[in-house]
Image (cartoon, rainbow, N blue to C red; front, side):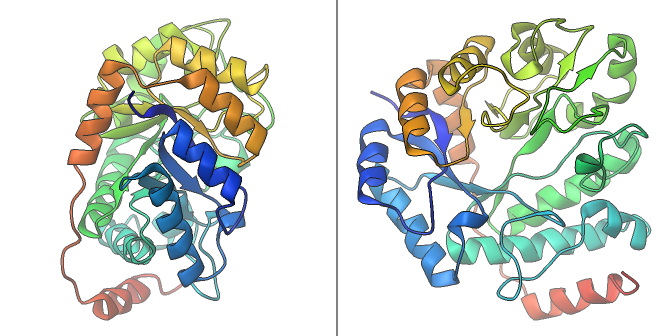
Length: 331
């Protein structure tokens, strides 16, 4: 039996015996860490090691280390990075500053054994964007977003850390927080094709991507993209993304029903992997039972993502940090 079609969080800074047994039996494709899992460098390294030992392989370990509010590794041990949009504005859209930022973040992650960072956000910065999203974004159109996003991906790769493009096909028009409610967007598909989709189309060849829990009435009037066959079809055909597609966290309240229904509908719609982040043991059991083994096509995409992993390049990290701090003067 192949790896299971989900990525799991865990409850705390240490892997409990029952969790290890569950992961050994369920064999999730990968794991994701949050602030509740982070205390010290040595503790994180042990946790990462124990998660991988539970499944008997070098499973990918993900984190959201965007900077700003969405930063799981924090001071005083790790550097604080400004929100992406704040940095873009303060540095005049410097691509070099964005590369350096991600190269430094990746150095910190790789030191802990973490090899996937869920960045960059390719969502369009719209006037109506909910504040929970706005300062995480990079720009108002593809011409602004694409070079900065490429710098993020390059900085990650040079640090030995893979990227996950998000949130396909875009949260930029969301006026509510999808952690708490389902965003509904009435914008015509023709407008979305002209504005929202191009940043994602530019990175359609990336190995991994994450969906948006958002409902576009002109795509599917009933279901959010994550759980919509039409929505996933749009990601695959219109945008052209053929990489490993994971859901955004199914614990978010944009989705209705219990975790079993949320997971089932996401896979039926065409997602490759269900992302379950809150670490609740009984929910992990349910997600594991619901998801089962990855489909053949999903496993091929997963294998391709694993094959795309690369070792970090050798760099003078203190020199890169000094250059980055110089570019950030004024923030």
